[in-house]
Image 1: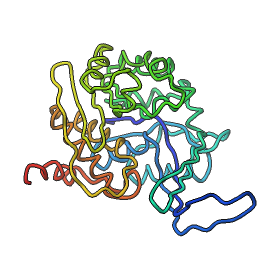
Image 2: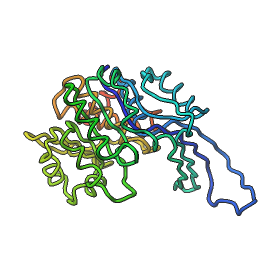
Image 3: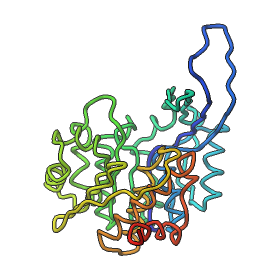
Length: 311
């Protein structure tokens, strides 16, 4: 396979409108309920498949209905789910999202099976078949973050597998302390600007990139939302603007960007074309509700990259 997406898998249940939670023992009504699969590794894997990349998924879910839903969705999107383990001792990670009338969201999260993923769960017979090992959701997998993750990245590199890393927000505030053991074994690093600022202690994208390149990371893409992204290798660096689209839901846009970036690398594109595909995949994502509903095939996504040139 081209890419193995390893990391967090979540089911999101959205309810709206909920402007206040009921008092204890009371009931409140809402009008709309949606159930979506999510989590960085899930979203990136599905987007990669839509872009025509051969992709597998690896992680831990519960042996429950939500776990079955995740497996079904991966299979429907032609993602190889052989590497997904269903654990009888915990439930699938779950987020309840209460959406207020003004669109503001409140979250209740159960860490569940994602919190149980460890180095011992790695299926190396599957990992060895991948050209790129992408770890999605670093800093929110307590039994896998830090040295265990570093061990896996190091072993992958010794096997000739290219390594990629995407972070989540670190509520513990340990950032570099947790991630530093991993960085020397990362080929492609794709954090958000806010995450990269916390990690490096610097604010400007060019300074962040210099800090990270010093660990030996070759390719860096810093996601900056509506401000586009800043991408660099040791040899070149530039800013790629975001594509103007009607934003419906920005959830999952960062994971879509990562998918586009990895797809460009798989296809052997240069850095500029790769970053433009990443930006277009992120733009497609925000045009529909949910983390993957807006993701299109490669041809349609490339069409987004041409839209700016024709205006």
